[in-house]
Length: 342
Image (cartoon, rainbow, N blue to C red; front, side, top):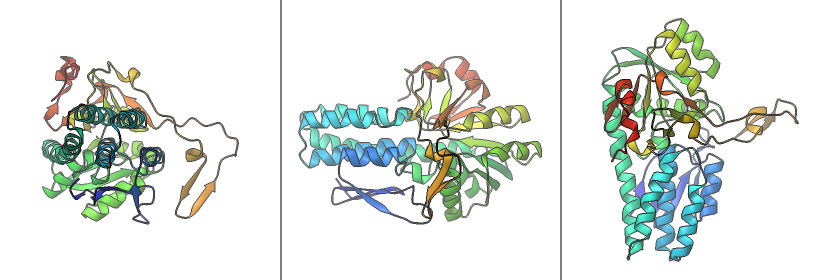
């Protein structure tokens, strides 16, 4: 494979390196990813995260393993294992479907390398189109609220929802970004705050439970979030807490936008009830781990419910901002998401 660099992935001498997003923002640590077990471990630990980035990292690893001479039968097994590593995010499945087609070619090694590299370039372009389409919806002087992390750390490009905010800020439209800390693992507080700071975009970090008070005080003009899967009826799975924001935004009359590439759309999934929701470890709720070590604040034997995602019903969404354009509630009612986007 050729030399390749994104915010979170690197290919050097046909080796895949992963930026540890659990170590940020205190440390920038890169891990050499040699095997499927390595990558699955990184995905489960959220060292690799973000629906687009997970799909890209899996595709690049498969291409690397093919170049190293892994037998076709073992590549098929690797593909299946990677597919099962993150059940909610459909980008992974979509990317691996394309890698499987390449694997079935007569000259599968160059086909897989070309497909994986192409997916990275494609994601960069998709992010740019999403940013342009979404920025057109941002009004002058906007105070925007965002959840989780949807920037360059989670994609190969400028990001999805955060890419929109970045592009709108470049156009002089953004006066303030409210950043939810985002549980589990505080991905907004650690990653989105860091990215906004690097981009020079003014922001204030808040606890997830503070959003309602800000909306009541008319301090939020729009909510922008990403997505891990868009069902055929327009329902959206995203980081836990997204649904709460959508309900609050509807009550307060605030636009609620979802920004995602077409690779996040799943026409075979009828609705949000059919989206598998990953449950995460109890220790992410009973305490916290970081560069400082481990801290336990809840009883050691506390019973915990810790879903990584929730589902926002289509009727609460003001617009789905894709690389292909903005999908309106009226178009969703007509069944636009029931057919596949190419």
